[in-house]
Image 1 (spheres, rainbow, N blue to C red):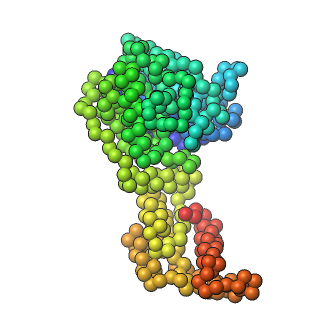
Image 2: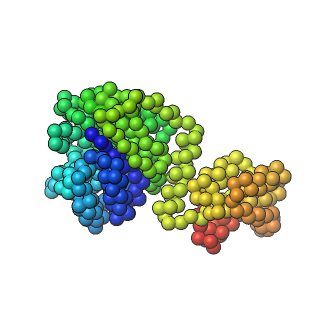
Image 3: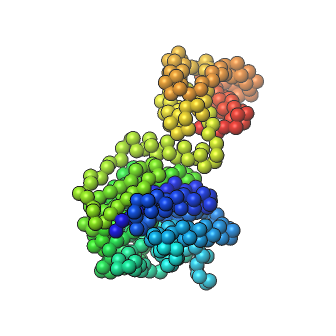
Length: 398
């Protein structure tokens, strides 16, 4: 089987744009000679859509876009994540589902069975859980389809939930040719290793090669690192996509290569996660300009470095605001950071306004030399200056 795993960066609520990305991926898959195209969890709506799911027009828009995807599916077998309406009388009005499509026909839906309600997840607020997995017939091939949490049950990778149902166990012994997983799995250090372990366990239990397609991008407060992957029936890692970027992972199950070493998470991956999260926050709000206070210390220097890489140095303005407490070393370091990064630098001394505010308030508070209250004045003054700059120039404050 020639599988095309489309690791996309959706925007929550941008259904038409997400649908366009999905259809473009179908064209790329067709050009590569793929037979099956796999997308991530809720690829059509973006994850997590949260209370948008409560809007009738939002679900209707997903249904309309899904029809366009079905029409674009000629000669392909497609599995794509979407919300869908649950039958009348269900616990909640929606399912978190995978639409299963073949050559212009909607074959049906596989609903997510395990709905997490721990950590950053609150899926039971919106969705009715699926009742059971099934085997999907595709010619002479037999496929199992799971959605994110469905493969984590019993994988020794999480201790946050104890589910009464094990979707993978229900597929064990079903003579599968391939196990698919649609994911929206947020980034954390070493998360890739955990995903490999969970998928490997599922592959060994079903005696079938397995492929996981993960969302990439920053959405709301979450960062998704992508790194979609494939394991053979022995659970050995045989292919994986890029981290922190959209990517197409092409896997031929008849030509699986030698097992790969699992890459380790490190400080570099954390840095790239922060860059992606900041870039997408600005991009998905259709803005680019930011302002930040640059003190000459390590913290603000790191923020400036991340901002310059995420947004482009021309879109970053650093503001250095020296006072009576600013050392020559801090002044030099702040200017040197801005020079090396190539970002804009404004120098706005705040000693004058600091003295004025201090003189105004001293009769009421009784300041001490270099006291905590003086530092609070400086902090407030710097914040006001940065907010004023953002308001004037239409940027965001970091």
